[in-house]
Length: 493
Image (cartoon, rainbow, N blue to C red; front, side, top):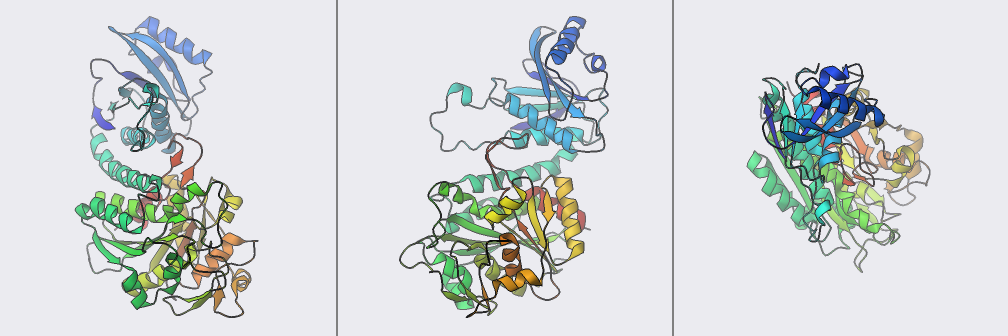
């Protein structure tokens, strides 16, 4: 979708949108229209019970000069100190017009009391909601085909284009994550995930390091390799490094993503119903890749490494069995009670490797780790576990600012005791109760002393079965804006 900014409305055909705060005088916002059109628009808004809630829309057609124009009044609510209503309004407009037949939307801010970055935020909301992935659709009906091609924001001020630059980099990263998460597992598997990241991210200046199965075996990554051994698709460990800090030798912050490109559950096989959704079990790795794209795209002044632990969990004759014992890269042994608890197995080896390789002070992993997380928090929040209150507080602040909401969950010795094994150092699952927490304490056993660590269980957040003002049904891109904001607020100088 093309985004542009202008000081005055263009000529020709377009849909016109006017953002409205709760306390705005509607007649003032409609003053650019002739009297009959102002009256019609006001009456139409009243008839549609337009109360100006964020993202609400009242729509009508009015005479505007020599054009009959679609007019949309979009609500911003009353909270002028918040940015989310602006993005919600842009998203609501895109959702309304995406397949409407309109090809151009003009959002006119002239005369509105809006913050300096309002134009960029409205444009971002429209762009992020307008994202679609129609690569495999060959028979879309005419009314299903997207028509909205351009959004022009008028009256945003001189800084609109500059404010858009950072937002456009975030949008590119978010779109990349959604693309990765949407792709089917016959197209996206460990090797093709790596190559797609190379194609997109190397031109941005990101350095790549990739370990294949032989290199991982030589190092002793028995936990990750155990998960992968049932698939004909070989695993990969992908590391992407962005050096943007003033001191290129400064320790990087490290993000690690779970990248199970398809998860059958292995021998502990999942029910057939709904298993097709397990293509998005690489949502953590997808978020890390998208965040790296966003950071490099805006040339973030920080050193950041994104690590993706990539494997496919399949149940062939060579697959890992319940009861097997594997030795992790850290040297700790793991009794595999359930092969469907595979995410923590690939993550633990990736965490050990990343800490040895980069010696980070901050380590954050993202994973679609447990169904129990969805039971706990639904699809409203990602779960956050951390060994450091300061880091948890910073992540919470970034989550509130970005809209990728997190809720902190507990850790502790009572939960740690639940994964003790009678024959190995630990088992990979505990009892049914507290399943998300026992998964987190499992990972905590692989965090080096002195490292500030957070685990984000985003199982309920990477895919949505319902549309919202920020995304349609499908991949959400959760985690990209969160990581980008965390780096901007806490890592960049």
